[in-house]
Length: 121
Image 1 (tube, rainbow, N blue to C red):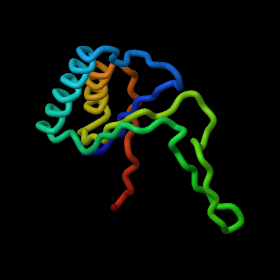
Image 2 (image 1 turned 180 degrees about the vertical axis):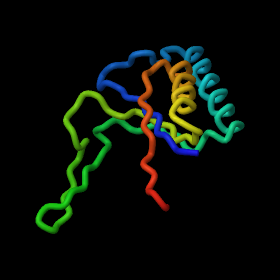
Image 3 (image 1 turned 30 degrees about the horizontal axis):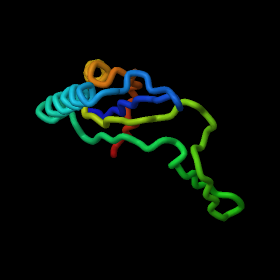
């Protein structure tokens, strides 16, 4: 079994598909809870997280042997990772099927990326 990153992106300033009323938020949370319950029951779920906006990020890099820290994202872009799931799946097709369920639940596109597995590890 392999692990996959299912990540969703947001565009700065865009609130596409976000719940606007308390009723919409309740339905959104019910869909998420149902999805995560299904993932846990199947052994698929590993971890999930929602990230702060990019202005909360700090970039750490090396410069002439010193560590330099810079506020904000590494890349100047309007698009940023907003949240993610790490899942176990038998193969890419299974990971894509789970990604489709996430899309249905959150109404945002999902990027599916396999984790690199070190041979012999």
